[in-house]
Image: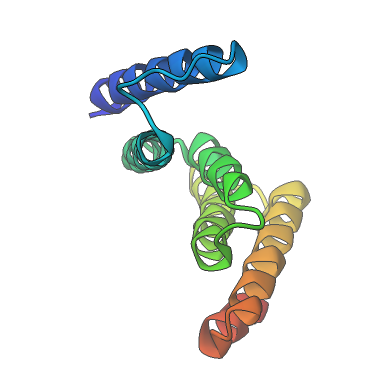
Amino acid sequence: AFEYALSCYAKVKKQRDEYLTAAAGGITPASLDVDSFNYIDEMMVLCSIRRAVSLIASGKFREAATTFAKEAANFGGIDDLQSALLLERASRNFLEIDASRTLTRKVPKSLPWMRKHAFHAALAGHGYARVNARRAAARCYE
């Protein structure tokens, strides 16, 4: 599943880069318009989320959390709800890093991962509050 998600992402990224190169040169390809470019961006997000889910399945919570956080940054001021959802998922993955380390090494929870969890949860709560999703915001702030 991971290889499929990675190949899907690479294919869509190549299409996006070709479009950006053509647009930077002042040449707009006839086959791609603004709607197509938005579709390519949406496909990149979906491929990244697929990749993150496959990373979670293989126990790589740190990589999954950074993938969710990077995708949330892409929606910074555009879609607060989608950004908040991705940030909340990233924060939960940071908690899973601590849980998996505690189970395998029998060490106490590491403070940096708890800080990252708290930071991303607070950002997610703020995003939920901006779209008046108060229950979701309260869940993040707990």
